[in-house]
Image (cartoon, rainbow, N blue to C red; front, side, top):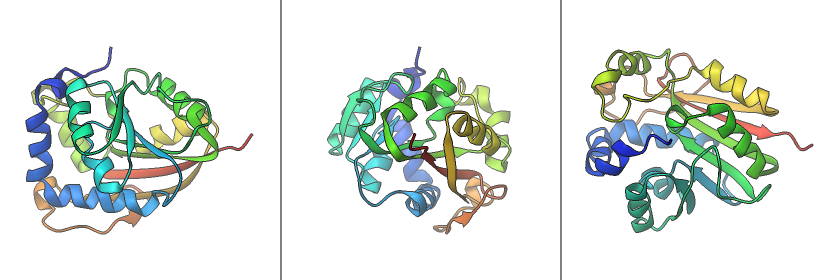
Length: 212
């Protein structure tokens, strides 16, 4: 079962987090923009309230939370109900798929990447943004996991973990970038993303589906 309960019941708290962490949010957007394709049909899997999709110009997405979907639709997103393990899209119909902090909430990460591969056209791109479990913020989240409304049932991954999921599904790693340097409280301006991983707590990987 998808871990939707906190998102169904605490939409306001979810939205407030991005308001309170404005520069973290803006820094994450910059990192995603660094690798996001500029054209083609793109969807966000785990679109949530549409806060990332709307800012990035993505007009389609899916999510299992009815409450979040309603907010995404208010933001002009064609948001439909669906989970990462069973995407409501046709085979090879999508040019790029974005997932932002979604992978830690799915029930089956491997199946989720299989589904992303299924819906992507040959040569299509998967863009995965996540908090690296080995990073300063990732370690803090893990320490306080039981206290968090949203992360209590989450499973965090490292950059290497995500690489392995992608490789297993015949994706080629194209680009990796990172941002959110220091603790969340220390991010008081928009941070420019850097290539690679290992320093920033928020990592974005772009991978290309093999065209065979």
